[in-house]
Length: 452
Length: 89
Image (cartoon, rainbow over all chains, first blue to last red):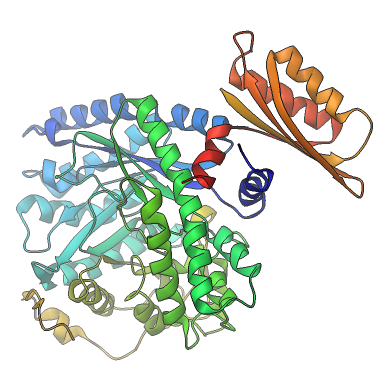
C-alpha cells in the first residue's frame, strides 16, 4: 500500500524542487543511409529520422500526463555524420546539417545531436570536411549540435585535432556573434566520449549501438539540495547516504519513463543517464548543493572534495535504480546553466583553474564557460588539451564547451536564454601556449599500470 | 489502472463530496481516502481505480483539474506506478 508521506514527497519534489526528466533522447543509426550521392544521402537521412522519431514528442507528452512528471526536452541523436559522409566537400557535408535541422523541426524536437566526428587517432577526408564545415553548419541551423572526440585513453590525444578545434571554436563564435556566439554552446570537444549520452550538445548515436534506442537523462539538483537542507547537522557519511537515497528515487523515475517510452515507441531501452543536470532556475543548482554541504561559496577550498562526494554518491544511488546506466552519469557543472555557479563566477570565487580541478572528480568538464572574445585559438586549444588530458589519464570522459564571446571582455556577461542561461566572461591566462599547440602530432596513450 | 489523486487547498464544506461526485461522473471508483486538515489547510490523498465504465485517462485528468481550478484547489492526478517505482525497491 502506498504511504501518504511518499506520495506527498514525490509531489513536493516535482512542484517545489524542480524534479523532472531532463531529456528523452532517441538515438537513431544512419549507417543504412550511406550513399556516395549527396542527394540520395540527404533524402535517406531525413526520411529515416522522421520515420523513427515522428511520434517521439507526442508519446513523451502522453507519458508526462500519465505520471504527472514534466519531461522537459525531447531530442534525437544520430550516427556521427562524418561516419556516413566520407567523400564529400565541406559545403556538401554542411547540407546534411540543414537536413538534420529540418528533420528535427519536423519531429518537434528542440535539438538534434551527431553532427560530429571521432578523430582521436587520426582524420579521414570525411572527418576533415565535417570539422571544417562546423562553423557554417552551426551558424546556419538552430537545432543542430556538434561534437568532436579528439582523444581516448587507448589512443592518446590527437594534438592536430585539438589545434584545429581551437580555430573552429573561434570561427563559430565569430559567425554567431550577433547571438552572443551561441554556436559555441552547441559544440563540444571530448575525450573518451560515450556513445549513448542523451544530453546535448554532446549526444550522438555510437556506431556500436543498435538501429535505434531510447536514452533518458534525469535531473534533480533541487531535490538533493532540499534533502540536505533538512539535515543540517548530519556528518559527511550521513550526507553521502542522503544523496544516495535521493539519487535512487530520481533515477527510478527516469527508469520508469525510459521503460514506458521504449514500450510505446517500440524501440529498445538504451540507458538512463544518472546526471544531476542544473538549470539557471533558483533552487536547481549543483553549486548550491556544494554550498549546502558547508562551503561559503562554490569555488572556494573544499569544493573539489564536496563535488567528489556528490558525484560518487549520485552514481552509487542511481546505479541500483536502473537496469542500464550510461551516458555521462555524474554531476554536471555548466557555469552558465547553474545559478550558484554564475554567482560564484561573478564574485571571482569560481575561476577556470578551479573548474578544471573540479572536472577531475565529476562528470563532463569545462562546460558552458564564456571567455574573452579576443582569446587566441591556441589558448583555447591549450585549455582543451589540459582538460582532455584529465580525461585520458583518469580513464574518464571529459569535454570542453567554451564560448569565446565575440566582442566581450572579463566583467561582461553573455546571455543565451532558456536552459543555456547566462555566462559571466571569465579570465584566462595571458601567457601563450602557441608553440606547444603548433607542434602537432599525437600525445601518446598513457601507461595504465603504476597509477600515481 | 490505479490513479492517485491528491487535493490541497483552503478547507471548506463539501470538498470531498465535490471530488467524489466528479469521480462518479467519470466512472472512477474510490478505493481509499486519507485526509487531514492543518489549521484551515485541507489535504487529501485518494487512491482510485478505473473501471470498464471509466472515461479515457486524459479526460479524467482534465475534468478533475477543471474541478480543482473552479474550487481553488490544487489537484494532482498521477498513475500509481510513479510512486511505486520511486519508493519501493
